[in-house]
Length: 441
Image (tube, rainbow, N blue to C red; front, side, top):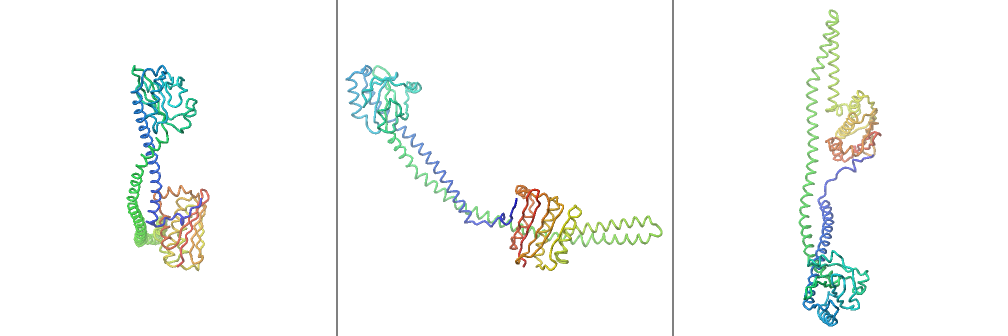
């Protein structure tokens, strides 16, 4: 896994770009909402159109019911002619194109334009019969593939409304009107199209209200990022100041006292050696222990604040930095040209980068060898710290950042401010390489 911190660095947020992204995503969302709204309106429109079709059919059934007589049950020619005159004289008006009357056994008693089917039978849906007997209407699309509906195929798609009616003697019959589906659908379209401008205006107003909010939010995010970067710089500067203070207090205080104690113990051992060798040995051991304490403190001071960068130069400082690795069983190799001359701030930045990388090696890498190399290429200083440790994956790096391990993040910001970059390349089990490039001047 290779991970470039130059590519991963977050650029300053552009308000215009953020608002553009928000506007485009909002447009997509509005389109989806609009499409959903249109579908809902179409469904509502179709439902309302069905209801209107039922009203038309029920009205027609009431007209027919008032003229219905009991002779129609026996197929009386006079009764059929009277019904035909009524249906063709006013009931068959758009959207109604056909009228049928049949009894609950399925026998056709009247057929408006196919009298040859009168007396034939059709199978009725028991559920539909129960519904009609309960006084409700039954609305459904006509299945033109059925043989019994073969005479209706020339009308195109039809909607069929069945309404219960009664003869004067109380015999229940079924009045069935076939309506043009296109007329019903057109009625539905008119209904939902009437609401479409309202939906469009509402969505447009919503979009216009959100854009100023998006500008405000993007500005706040941008300002928050700038504040974070400023706080990071201040934290780094405060950390440097505090490290200098702590290093100065330790160096001028306890380190000097331990050094003086070591010399006093060594002098005391020499003074009593002739008269009391055992005491002299104890004093020499105390002096050696004090010297070891001084070395340990000086090593700690090197980690806290490296005065040798300014005083002895970068090669010595890097050597002092890698020296403590030997105590962890890690061999270190420092490769830097002795004639390399850098500005003090560049030297400090290179040292800090090496310090962070070596700290990670000592803490996490479980390496046996690390190489530190500093070169100058085309006016840029290149620092490479490479180890043979366990490496890490992108997921592990993300977890470390989430846990608050921001050392490389801070280093990346410092390098970026100096016009440089930080690249980290690592694979699980294949070690890690940290490469820092900054201008030499």
